[in-house]
Amino acid sequence: MRVRVLKTAEAGRGLRPLAVLVHENDINDVALPSDPRSAPGAAVRRWMRRTNFNGEPLSFAHVLDGERDVLLIGAGPRAALDPARVRRIGGRLAVESRRLGLRALDIRLPAIAAPHARALTTGLAEGAYTLRLNARAGRAPALTDVRLLLDPPFAASPLAREADRGAMIGAAINSIRDIANRPGNEAPPRVIAREARALARRCGLGCTVWDRRRLEAERCRALLAVAAGSREDPCLIHLRYPGRNRRLRPLVVIGKTITFDTGGLSLKPGKGMEWMKFDKSGGMATLAFMALVGTVLKPNRPVIGILAAAENMPGSAATRPGDVVQSRNGKTIEIVNTDAEGRLVLADALDVALAYKPAGLIDLATLTGAANVALGRPYSAILANHAPLRESLQAAGEASGDRVWPLPLHPDYRALLKSPFADLKNIGDGSAGTVIGGLFLETFVPPEMPWAHIDLTSAWEERATSHGPAGATIFGAALLTQWVDSGGLEALAT
Image (cartoon, one colour):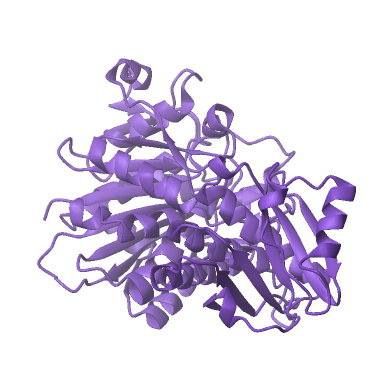
């Protein structure tokens, strides 16, 4: 998608389709277009008054102003316009443009902040995505040429930079969606490893894959226990960006990559299990972020991405409830429930990450259904042992639209992880599930190491929305990109 930023006066008097943001109950202040042969926006204004179109969030209308297509998109109350809503507005415009067969679109932005421009173009790219169901299938026509039209006072340069950044973020997200949307039979760990190697070649990254033999040599017994019931071997994928200053300690981002999760012998209910192909979403967000690190962000600090990939199946060799395994760092774990498997693969991955002597750790995982119960879809949960890291990620989430909300890592909850048979067990008593998952992971991180855990609640959509298609969302990639752009890496200790 090509995105350009122009002054409104430079747009010319052609009849390109035009989108206009309409704030709720603020119709009289809408900057409407005009056909050269009609009064300014007369037909559109008459239609708005007749239909009581009042700009409710994501409401949409297609109106003709003479021969010009005008797309009216509800932006909600002006004071409540935030990047998350702007991103959905972009997605809705892309979805409706496809429905109308539009390849080009002008978007009138009488007053918009630079961060909103990034969110808008990210959303436009996300909304334009279509799943390619097989290698021979093409994609449905989508927007290819977008112009953002600015009214005075002009601030085109910073807005153009942010708009370009948003389009690149959206493109990276869409490229990984093709992998993330594959079903379990088409995307086992070995295929994820193959895709990671290909991405590394394209994006100037190093890539190493630890196979089963290496995992055994490295004593990654917790990860191996998760994969014990599957005929598909697990792997640990390392993606490395060297940084422009290799003397700096790296950031390590870890993604849970369970390519299909049946729950193991603690079998999930059959209803809805098909969505467990998206239990690899933390790894997919890590892949998209690493692609952006290598091609767009190119920070001074080295960045490592680790994907802990396995399939959780109930085979005859599967780990049993009550089994005890020793993790890579030596702690023993009683596996009370084999469906609490993500924390097991992350436990070993966190210990592997420490070998890089990182400046900080961030993990992303579809770890608990409890996070969705607590927060729903608007926010994912964040738990961290380092307040500045948590606060900077929360701010980046608000700016990017990938919003996160903090939950406590309080020691009063730790008693729920005590086991009479091991150093700890992998679940609590059923209460505070997201907190317990975070506390489990915290035991594998040194107290002095800045670490944040993001428990993803909106990693996929089960059906198409007004602003995008069904399937993987790659939640987290835009968040981490915004965090890097906002100076998050520089704030870590050297």
